Image: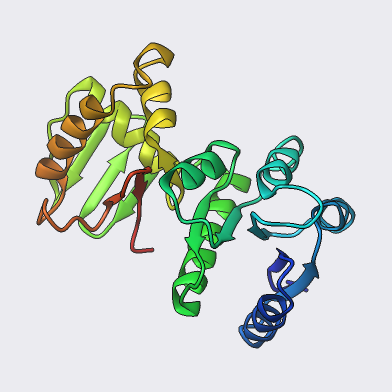
Length: 231
């Protein structure tokens, strides 16, 4: 029997816990709740969830620490919810291993959309590595280093393809500027954000129908980028 996805919510606000448990249960998710960091870590270890929804402001420890400790043993998606909406906090949470970040107050439909994206990404990671990524009219063939749009091959430089492949391999995740630069160009280039922006503009011109309103290569202002598919 296939069980519905299990979501662990770690938050110290009773009204948030009640609301999320009610809404997520109505959407056929199995929901566990914890109001403290240590409690959440223990619950995650005893009954590993499919997604963790994590608040940063917990009474016994910082949510950044919870995120880091989860990442010591699991790659389950972590969606951070917090009243802290500064770029510094978003980047810090993502660098600690979070997959996504929503600021309170948040729209429930947006949260559910992020949950669906995280579940798809997790399923891909647990299954065999996806070699060909298709979205809309865009097809990225990772082994052959070939990208087509509307059935026509798009010529990319080696660096452009490496950047696109890194983003596509992390579909749905918010990747920080520093993590992208480190993975694509190396640790010595981690601060050259403008360099990354130039390459992203080039990719959008080649891959997006409307580069000024991209569908796939999305900007997370002040934080980084996210590759989205329509699947």
